Image 1 (cartoon, rainbow, N blue to C red):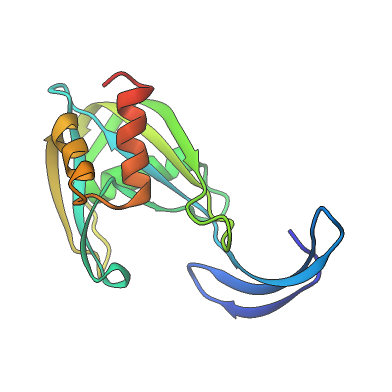
Image 2: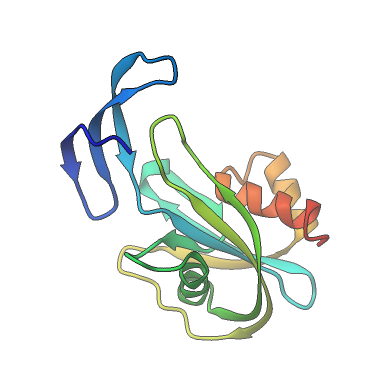
Length: 173
């Protein structure tokens, strides 16, 4: 992180800075960088090998998106704890078994956000706790059906696409 910067905007979800950087070849430039605390998400898989996806209204994306339950890390929060919290709040389930699936940088050219993805199994129901302004539908689909929606262009959320592919390729679901 560059020490020489100008704060442009500080919000609750992100910070935007102009940072003066030195590249590996010694050239200097000023870049606009979004600083983000990061996030975590959970791909929950039940005993019938169905995955939990939520359909959530996202104003910035102009409508409804298919996603895994996920959210922003709170200050000092561990990624797995964040994924556990979001799975309970958004999907109404808790998991007894957790496995790391992937870490990703959604937009590394302008943002330092890192998203940690987990596979959640051995599920039990808990009450949902949707936040004000969250519009969420909970759906359970076979992994095959979810991946078919990726191929059809219905699921376009990057963390969700990665989680589904990782579950198939690396977790053998």
